[in-house]
Image 1 (cartoon, rainbow, N blue to C red):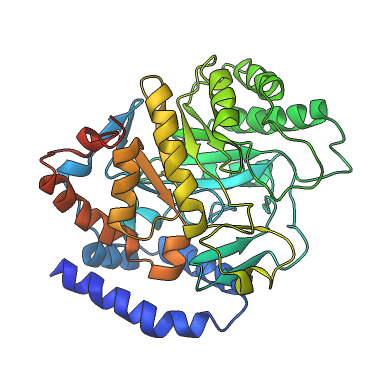
Image 2 (image 1 turned 45 degrees about the vertical axis):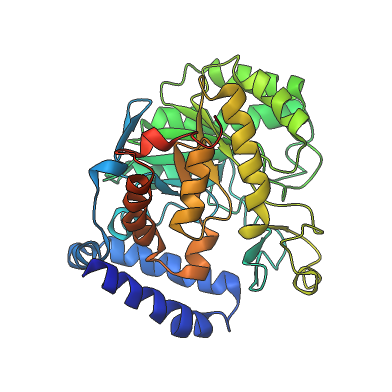
Length: 375
């Protein structure tokens, strides 16, 4: 019965509702659905109704990772709920975890428009928000008032400002200030993400070079943070550069890495040229990120899988997409763009199909499948 309900949701969204909402400005539609999700998240009745229709938990998808219990491996990636509006609705549409942010020390209204755009043929979104958010003080006050049914993480990055942050040292100090505020708030979150890979920021400050990354991580861990920390990785760097970054990361008590972020290569074969030419600035999510994301998941798992947890992110539009990342080495999977193209029922569809894929391969739990394609 639940499978039929999910199919009805999917057909209604893809062949009716999506055709309507795609007629309107991407950012306005995003804001509308964020507000709608926040309102539904405050309604006990609507949340229960959604959960009864969409969510079916399976023991085969449950995992305990670094002391955190996950009902299933599918999470909301940073970059969607950047003002902590959706934490109360996520479990009722099937998410096993979700990340708020990316949040910065100071608020930022976002890069000049357009900040979002759709590339329908490419199955991608143009993203140029540049860490748009209300700032760490506002977000921590909001999060302090909430309880969470699933693990919720907080993504922290550098304030997107060229005037206030002129040097590498300024950037490190800015990030540390955000972490200090979060730590003082004693939030009931489960983990942090440190986003060092957003390609839409102003200026030339970055943390890809091993020495710069080392300086940042040294400062972060000097705070004696107790919660697990994940590093959001780029996919725009070569395999050799990623390995150099990883060699720095494993020097510190980092719990894992998220692979990865947006596609910068406008000539990527998954991008339709005519769609790309509509946008002069910004980078791309969805299917254009998938191939490199999967390549790096495999690379990092084979070299560091015994020391770090990998969260796979990029181009997840189906259970098969998620399962491929898991078999390459990801213990958990995050998505955003798939929701926009396939509909909000996608997460529940993935969680309904994953146990069948596990059974087909002779596994009884999702953890048994992690890295099996990389051996």
